[in-house]
Amino acid sequence: MARERATALLVDLDGVLRRWDPAVAAGVERDYGLAEGVLTEIAMQWGRLQPVLTGQVSHADWVASVADALADSAGGPQRARAAVEQWQRYRGEVDPDVLAFVREVRAAGVRVGLGTNGTDLLDTDLAALGLADELDVVVNSSVVGVHKPAKEYFQAACAALETPPARVLFVDDEDWAIRGARAAGLSAYRWDGPSGLRYLRAALAY
Image (tube, rainbow, N blue to C red; front, side, top):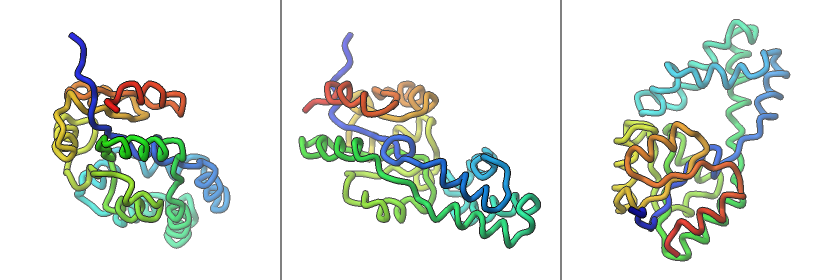
């Protein structure tokens, strides 16, 4: 039996709508004599990351914990805090192809939601990136209290979009998120660049 055609779009932020230049973190690590990749490695340790993604701790607390973990290798707490603050000033860049697609979809009357594992800094980031008015809904894991790929996260996203799961097309760059969305009943497409836009246009009802 053929799937119902999607009538709403849910897009991931990091890796889809927002890009990160790895040279920024690498530059900070060089400036402070840190090992290559250590900022991301420490920040993404699941025991440290999961609480901030579910709203149990603030973005500021998470950043402070990263600095604490770096203190010995950075040459003391003060240098560690300075390194992390410099790293955190960079908030990424909007992918122009994806933003143009989001605008095109919304202009055609299709609701578009942002579905992201984010912190309490998300609204500030969206404003700084000029994205605050570019989406119909924002589904932030730290507000929902559960993160992708949990079924409950996608249920909350579909409710926010006022669209049943079978009618929502989800786009993410991570396989685990795609699998979670499909298990929750959504259509899902793994993003690997602008070449996927043709498929996404064909999959949506506009």
